[in-house]
Image 1 (cartoon, helix red, strand yellow):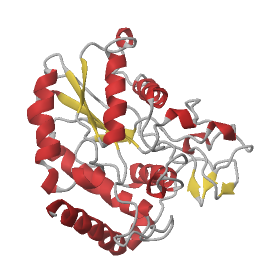
Image 2: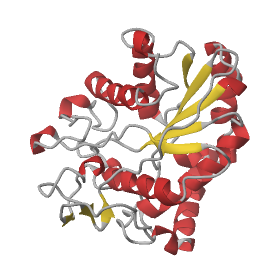
Image 3: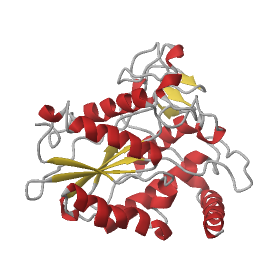
Amino acid sequence: MRTGHREWRSRALLVALSLAVACSTQVVAPTGTTPPGADVLAPFPIDRGDDGAGTPGTYKGLWLRLVDRGEPAVTPADGALGVVCIGMSNANQECGDFIGRVESEWAAEIDPAVRVVNCAVGGHAIERWIDPEFDDRLWRACIETRLPAAGVRPDQVRVIYHKAANQYTVAPDGSPLPLYPAAASDYANFLDHLDAFAARVPVWFPSVQAVYTSSRSYGGFANNARRGEPLSYEEGHALNEWLRSRGTGGGVWYGWGPYLWAPDCASGVTNAGDVCYEREDYVTDGVHPAASGRAKMSRLLHERLLRHEWYRR
């Protein structure tokens, strides 16, 4: 009963917050040249807006170009460089797959100081990581249980990989939230949640130097509209805008992790990582990744981190 009340209260709070920050969805214009393609209303990979006039340049006026925050300054502590995965059930499954590959097929490519720790917890998306009522189950359990099991001290945690997503994508009465650019949209909520998450990172991990963030992968196979499209896609745009205009502060570098979203392979379109998704990449619910889906996401994460010096052998 207490859990149900807590979730209802959280959902109500989300709606109130989104109404209170109606102006927060204002997009800050990126610098640089204008994307060459047209504006579209159908989702298209954000990381392919510079592919030329044959591909779209904007979606609802939002640029199809990932924000590039450059390379962070990341250093080990006493020979260890801890990387902590944070997020919900998808993040937990994907990070578990990633760790298995880091310790086997990719080990020769990765700096031996790197130690990845899976602190993601099923059923606990970003709203719960920013809610103090869940601190014992999430942040404290990570620090007091999962880090010691991996032989990593809290001060050795230098990098966070955050698979970020909203848990509550409908109103308290169950009705769908409006889409971008509505002030009370899932997009607007996600911006505020990213702000709150960034404020909590230095409280729990004061030695963190870099936070890599990814949004959801494709939601078009989901059996539940709350995890479908274009919600999953538009959260990627919210993250991109947050990194452009608000993702700074506290001496911590914030940047994109891998861009995981890509459409159904039947569309003939891939993201810049040459990934698309098939129904077989997901389990029965169409939300959680099957083995092939986890493998695709792990590869994208590995290839993203290989671009940075701290990760490479």
